[in-house]
Image (cartoon, rainbow, N blue to C red; front, side):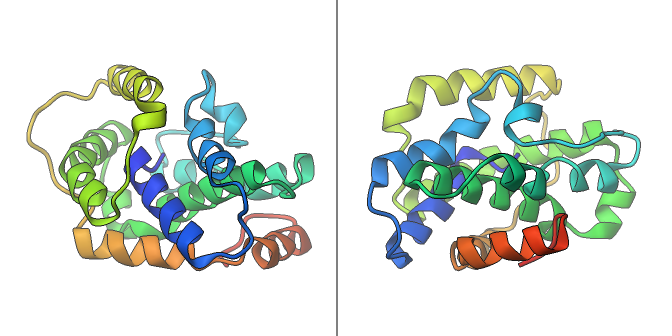
Length: 194
């Protein structure tokens, strides 16, 4: 999943630009909650997964159509959840170079990703003036658990999240019209790009 910092930065930019969010606290709770549950496969409507084919694995990590069949995006909380899922779907399916994904194992990808999160978190927190205060304990426990499950160590890896590319991604996702995008997904009955 995208890091909490990435989700919060996208949420902050979306909130700043949007006129459809009235309850900021509920919106941000929706942005964070999908990653705070025990089984992220349920909260992300994950499809069939085979970690030996990393590109296909990432493609099925979030099924937006399945979410929209089960949920409405009619509250600020649900808008936050939907924006979270959109962010993860686009992060895993548009951000990374396809050649990189073809030549790396799931395990090494996770190690590169969590190493990169450590590098980019401070940058994102400063640039987007985001804070974890309301969620700090839950987020720290979640990060520790994820790192342990994915066998991530503190070894030096490759940074796969360049700052400028992250900034562009945050702006791109924060400009998505949630209603129009949901209609496009429902019309196609599957994940599609905005």
